[in-house]
Length: 227
Length: 248
Image (cartoon, rainbow over all chains, first blue to last red; front, side, top):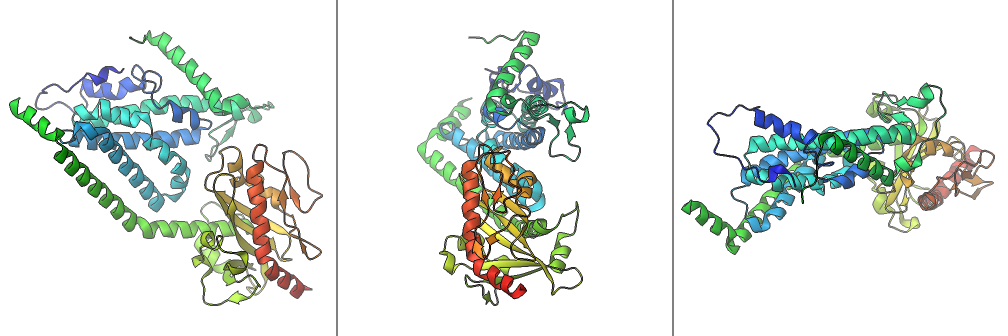
């Protein structure tokens, strides 16, 4: 369990700076010691599903960060009125509205992006990180810290996604940044004939890789599960 | 603290919960309905533009930032025909919903045709682009096929899909698969043969006008594509034959 679940905003002083030490931690903690994927083990499903290339990983990171941040703000604003017996449904409704709004706006203004996102929009709604942050943080904290918490967790999710995607794309298909204008065929450009590792392209390969990342990170941080 | 506790109890009452959820539903519904209606025009423009881009992409290479609208107006002439190959007047081809025509019997379908005309002489048809629609493994597949001026040889295809498996069937969207159709033929001595994507990948079918190399692991998607092609070439057969015999 994250330490933030018990952290409830104290009666704070009148003018806390926007980026106080505590608020900065809301961004930096999820990047490492409280990472949603490797420490809280949330959002693993999508982390395995969409990381075979870097491009979708980046798109998903942006989408999730946006949705988590703004859903956090809304739930935080509504937190004193939400009946606790139906709070999960209320959270889900808010998340869905945001996700659909984002999708509609993309379709109207950046159509290419919308086509790329379409598969992942559903994944954002069901992503455990969004609901997890709403339930664990936004329900008990003010809008601004909630917003930062959303951004932090979105980026923390994104870091792991991009690490996974870089390794999988490089060793799975021998390219980097496929689908971008600066697409790079790494091995070809070095004159090496590389047979891609098919396991890394499958979700199973990603699962093994994620396990290794968790192992390395925990042994560096000395993190232990508490029972 | 007393009042807080009172508030809390009110928030647990059934009446409050019912009113709250009703209010939330109405609010969310209103927001989404408003967004959907106010953005629809812009979205439709994008969809229409994508359609035009797809039609053009089957016959020519669209450069980055090319003016699709202008090129389309200049080079594409669209009209609608019926199963017997006769032109149906007064219907905009872009207004024909291929997805809903697909559900009708082939004989009853309205069939849009897009002619790609010569740049300087607009009476000279360089290619015809025909829309296709069918069902893959999981969901609908669709696309366009362009036939050259002999109304038989494939000049280019463009496929899209709603839910084929990423990395397997979804590859029909990629250029790598679509170029395999170039130069293939629909008819053999006036008989409709269509083009078949074979099972398995990596074989060379360059000497066979009616077969293309398959996609490994996506035989069922390929089957859907094959059915779609056969179905729609069948619909357009009379029209295409008429055109071919006019050539000779």
